[in-house]
Amino acid sequence: MSLEHPIVAKVNNVRINIGSKEEFLYRRLAIQASQKRIQDGIAYARSGNGTKRKQKALYKTENLESRYVSHRLHLYSNKLIDFCVKQKAGTLVLKNQEDKIGIAKEQDFVLRNWSYYELQTKIKYKAEKAGIELIIG
Image (spheres, rainbow, N blue to C red):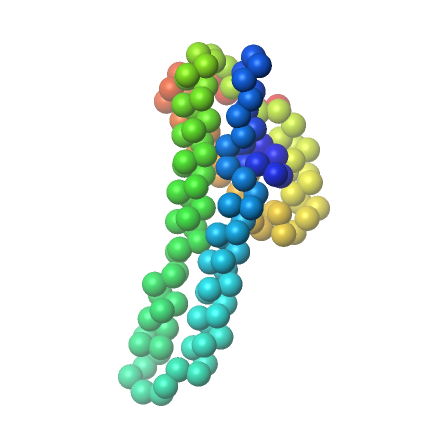
């Protein structure tokens, strides 16, 4: 895992980058901006018929960001495990994770928008299911 690509994998001389910072963060920030616009616009909604009608658009986007992130992380972890199976890797080593988490904690923006732990959890689950030993170092 890195700051530029959610997953960077290398087996023998074969290297693969899964996902990109721009693709992942662009959509996530767009969703956050959309929700902010909706919240700001609620104050100017026409009166009458209660708050439920006024907040209808906000309810539609309620879990949109978390669903998007979960979907992307499933996709990334699935590609990683498929890559490992294709390369016939028996062990998957996640290196320098403490360093990455330390860097993310220093930068509030990265910590808020990059889901390292959730990605690790999904990789762990899928690795166990595929019979691949996982070492987090």
